[in-house]
Amino acid sequence: MLPDAADLPDLLLDLAVPHEDINEVVALRRAVTADPAVRRLVEEGAEDVTGAVREVDDPSGLADRAAQAPAALGEYFLAYVFLAAVPHARAVHRARGIPDDVSRHTLADLGRGMALHRRRHGRGGLGVRQGHWLTRHFCGRLYQLGRLQYERTGLGERTAQAIRSAGTEVTGGEPSLDLHIPDFLGPLTPAACDRSLDHAREFFARHFPEEPHAVATCHSWLLDPQLRRHLAADSNIVRFQERFRPGWEDPEPADTTPVGFVFGDPDLPVPDLPRRTSVERAVGDHLRAGGHWYVGHGWFPWDR
Image (cartoon, rainbow, N blue to C red; front, top):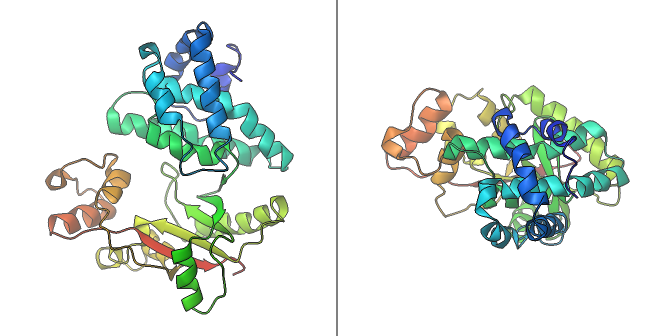
């Protein structure tokens, strides 16, 4: 359901949509509502998004529907898809008793996604890849709780094997929580992570009591152990790594992943990467020396 014209600006602010995008999004509303075919395309996209709880990794249809969107909407089509999905997402949250501030902070990842799109491409909108990511928030799979985000998911078999090898009995597919580290949210300090984890343990026990979680996992370039060679032992990233026990090793290089997260564009030429911060120097210098970065996989017992 699309928001009323009078309510749209306030909704965009609640969703942390960048201020420089708001006027254009508001102006495009008529292009959506005046054409029944476009409105139907948006509403079908919203149904794809909110039904993605079944197939979150392939919420199918987003790319196809974006390709069918009229040129007048540009890359704002998917933003309208998620705006139309807001009532459903909020209803899912209300049914679980999710506090309003958690609901608002979780769905505000739409604005973060639009900010990331502008940082990379220099123009407003929302890309298909970011749209796929946001399905987790709008179908009730993922929640932002302080500094970290938590995705309700099933334990992967490779991770389950690593955990069993460490002496903890788990089964592939059982409920687990996957941690994500959002951008534009300040330093990843140990204190901020502690507060988030304390909040999360209470939150999931209260709102999802039927899903007991034995472990939490994380799959991120931030868990690549090579970072310890480049960063101080008391750095936030190294301290974050120390929370996790090692999972399985990924043999495939993922060099563009840290480049994208740290510098905003995974396709930037390595020789030109800036060296302004310790993390920028770590990522760029390692690649310039001929090294590779990998996605690390880690876990820890959820009940401390």
